[in-house]
Image (cartoon, rainbow, N blue to C red; front, side, top):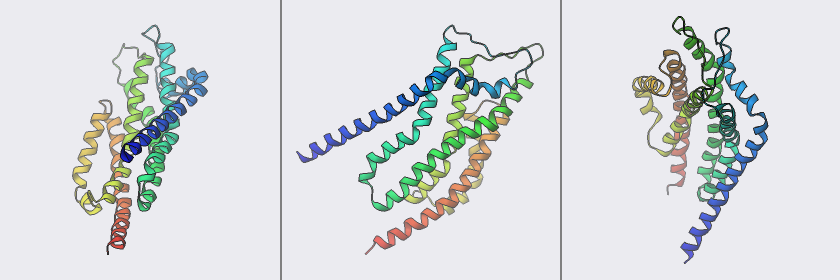
Length: 247
């Protein structure tokens, strides 16, 4: 009976925290909805700056001029609310963690958020200008480049997610080293395979051009090296903790 009561209380708390997370996204969305058109224009600037003179973006669907900016605003609202969403996740799992686990998870949640934002910023300020300039420069003669606003939005959101997730590599490595799944020395020995792997991932996650693939692969490799260095430190702390806990 006690176990059933405990399970119900956990489910109630989970529902409460999910509702709070969704409410936070909704609040941010309502605050940004008025600026939806401006936000889309800001997102489109890297493309507009590289379009040939006399060309512009187009809307091939009747409702896309309305829905595309609001879709962007909704996704952006989730990105902005991520810290609060992760705070709710932390509040739910923290009571079941040991003290040394709390010391690891809390900074990882913060750093994973910052790394995700860094990946998006890298895509917007570095990758987009170079990639769009390349795409427009290779257009066949006589072809007027006019990108559909919905297609453009879907394209850049995929890149945002790809770069945001790829920048989480150090977090994944730290967790694997801390839990004993692998070691920093083992990862260093696999470096040649990792380098090949990041270029393959870059090819799969980005558009079929060498610029985007390389601009994703190189940061992934550097983040792997950073993860190995920091993971080695956490690995040592985990071993020291185990020695202290052993009789």
